[in-house]
Length: 477
Image 1: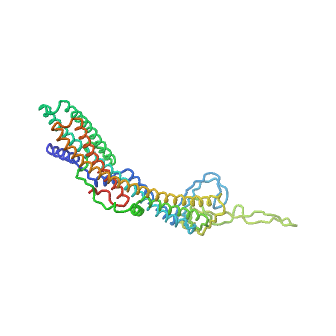
Image 2: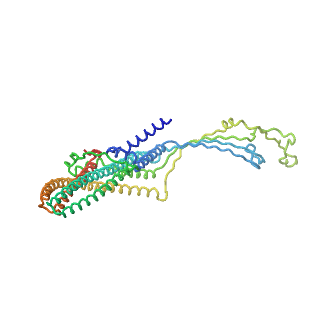
Image 3: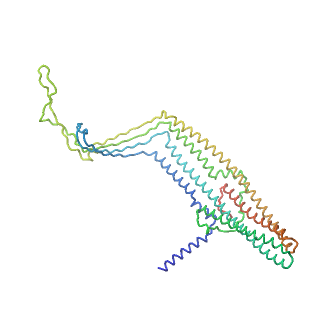
């Protein structure tokens, strides 16, 4: 038993360690977000609701069938349904019925509702895809932010190591009398500043990891990390296209345009449905009913032997009585229940036509509202196109500007490295004071940071542009 428990604990510890050591790739992050995002799950529920709406639309073509049944007790003075005489009695009556109604014509409202339901499913799918795209873009941005913070931290740590080595060399030069003692204080101040910058960079890296983990709904922030790699500027031909070409392509692939177009079609079907209310409605109906009772049933008449005749008048002149024979009603026990149901069954069927004449302007106002909704949907589409074109142009200019900034930052870095190399030689020979040397080093550090910043800014701007062009977001190489 102890061996089994030890084995289980070993497996659990190994699994936890593997999970803690997991490095998330960009594709894994995007896929995980698409599977677990609350917004996406809500959109999926909305799509399921539209499927139910379609089922309702299909059901409108089918007949409505309802069964009914009742059983009643009558106690006290009631009319005998067999003899028609009021009697003190207790009776039981049972009735069973079946009704069916089907719409044959309603101004094509049911047809248009079905078409609208199919279109609503498509529009909802566009909305779901749009949410997925936006979620993917957010994950890419958060992923690139972590990469930027990691590389920035590496640059600061490398700068710190260089500054620390320079401080050691400066101490030796001070001991040898080549440099004055005050020169090392400037380097020590720079070293303290870099230590503070490293702490800030570590915090920024931690917060960026938390941001991505929250997007993925992962709560183990401390053990969450992404896979590192040598992410270079991706090779792409997207910049070979003009902004107009990218915009035209985005018109074909962006879901917000498809949503706006679908909303116009939905509004048009709403108008057709509203106009259909002006037409007559023709429906067919069928009804089946049967009943049973426990009351005695009428069997016939027999002469009344105790009072065989009844005087109904007199003969004029003679005064003789005019007599009529008396009869007694004869009843029998009611038939068995199912025999009564069989004998008392009845059917009715027919057509019913309803012609709308006036309903307080409701139909005409619904038509007007639907026409306004169409115009509003058309304006929304035009505005979506304008916004998309502006966004594409802005994204193109941002990417173009980010590329120039990155290229300029690289050129500046090369120049700063050469200048700092010269400053280092002069400082070592005592030909430059510590303040000027510190300024040269700070310019180099700023240039190195600018290269990292502009690099990832350009990568993200490219991904945005590719996003509007319909290219996959998960490829950073």
